[in-house]
Length: 72
Image 1: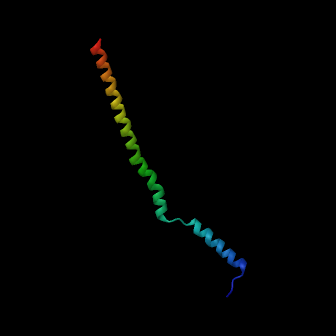
Image 2: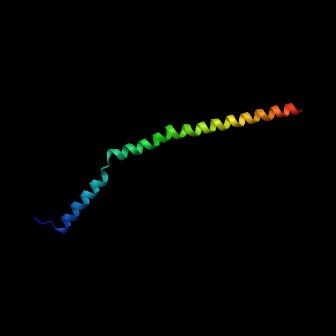
């Protein structure tokens, strides 16, 4: 049984359209897992840095006030 060129083209088009619509479950898991992990790991890291920086700035401010009072 031989396929004509039109029939072969039609079958290949249907196959590629069907193949592109199917996504593997692993890709959908990674697509949702990466943003969730970034929220739970990256955000606390930056919040921790901001907290440490604010403590450092607050400590320096208190130190300057102490030195000003000391030398007055």
